[in-house]
Length: 626
Ligand SMILES: *[C@@H]1O[C@H](CO)[C@@H](O)[C@H](O)[C@H]1NC(C)=O
Ligand SMILES: *[C@@H]1O[C@H](CO)[C@@H](O)[C@H](O)[C@H]1NC(C)=O
Ligand SMILES: *[C@@H]1O[C@H](CO)[C@@H](O)[C@H](O)[C@H]1NC(C)=O
Ligand SMILES: *[C@@H]1O[C@H](CO)[C@@H](O)[C@H](O)[C@H]1NC(C)=O
Ligand SMILES: *[C@@H]1O[C@H](CO)[C@@H](O)[C@H](O)[C@H]1NC(C)=O
Image (cartoon, helix red, strand yellow):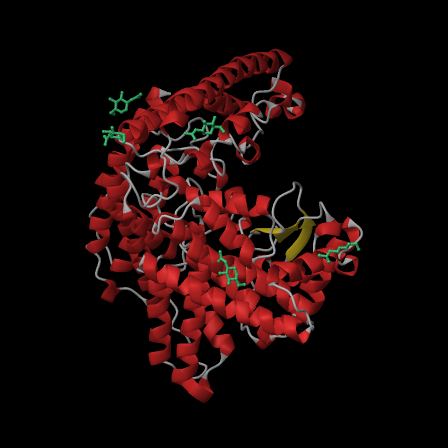
């Protein structure tokens, strides 16, 4: 494996020599995009596999600490090259791509300052190799003997990767920058689940039935299986060791404070995490304040809706009553699935043209979630529509799923939420680096390439609010379902900043969430542990939504009679995910230059083929978290 690593270093240095290409600004920019994306794939081989580039299928990412400096230097080199380009020479859509590329690189380069913080703690109960080998294996092709050889190489490299994790952890212990126990105490149990016989393991699964069907010599198959088993034994041993390491060395050294704004992490680290996730500059005080205001506002709306129903008790009592009401639940999985399909196709879809132009019309399918996850999830489809977007719905406990939350879940995950937003982005012909984002390793934030959660999740929450304008919530109970989900996102602003900035403890945070939402203690404990683990992440939803609403209001006021909601939505969606700061500039620019039904300039030199439409299963992991 060492030679492969070396080769990847060489590849990178070849790429960085590639600089100073001559040509017009637009072409130089395209070359930079291409080189950058090629480097990202080479540096993150499993990401490459997910997007359908199989050149690096025989290796895993390196977690050697020295790699961080190398990555920083390469990103800084790209930034230098980018700054040689004069954006005045670019056409409109390339200016946006240029600005976003600059933000991607700047965010990463700025994040390097924090590379020896969260990045030193590579596993937690929400993410990591110990959690979901299934998706990694499913994304890997097994069509040729070479595919199998590659996969064996990855298995053989896994113990080395786990030893690199241990090195990171040891550094974290030495410099007092470990995770809280709440982020990791479930990990040994999760590792335990991996320690099974090969036949039951996702890691070995490709060597069972599908290998049998491969048209190669039986002797070769035997040999592949032997080596896969041997490699798998090594993987088991390594996980075993890692588990022991965590229990014996790491747990006693986990950080004693719930939040990161303490000890050797510090408030600036939390600020940097917030800025990374929100893609805008906002202080923790402000986030907290907005949260408190939003909680009050939504509570007022809830109280009015409860009054209209002549309900006298508290919010918590109201939801306890709904949970008890059998008329608000479906009996069977089939009924529930059908009800979701009806909401998508009968209630929502026919109304979209009222508020959207140029609807991309890519199909979305409602399917049962194959595991017991959250209420709903979304997986993107392909740009030609051959693979539909998928709205996964949880049908595990129909009798416990309140019908009053189905509409907001649908609006969030499918249309006009994630599916519609992703469809506009797919149709927008974005450069590959914008089309394929690596949604993983949240623990590395802020030393991570951005994926613009505030835009993506802000839009989906905004979509829930559009349901009010379009009267999708048919009665007060459904409206209460909508408020409850919105309240949940508002509470996060209070609690996340509470934990990491104001020194709240976990129990205070759980109490706060329980006081205002319809969820159970078990659910809220997991939620709060999530905030403890990913500082700032859960704030992106509400802040993104508020920004989109604010921009809309600004446009409505500036344009008066001329304001057309459909055109506003086009401006927000047709440029793809981006930082809120750039979104704001784009909307302001649009307002300033507004002419009714203006014909947009098109970018002749950027009709590049962007055909990488294999959407990562990893998206699923992120978008799933609502
Ligand atoms: C990490 O990288 C450094 C510098 O390239 C190298 O000297 C060291 O041997 C590497 N560590 C491991 C465990 O491979
Ligand atoms: C880490 O914390 C311990 C206990 O609070 C302290 O003794 C030690 O000096 C700290 N180490 C560093 C590198 O700050
Ligand atoms: C962390 O959690 C583990 C597992 O629950 C427990 O055994 C250990 O005592 C905890 N350590 C600390 C420092 O709280
Ligand atoms: C739920 O229903 C049961 C039985 O009908 C009743 O005893 C209980 O008080 C109800 N709880 C609430 C919160 O309405
Ligand atoms: C719980 O909500 C009530 C109002 O419904 C409020 O007065 C109280 O302060 C809240 N408690 C907490 C811990 O936020």
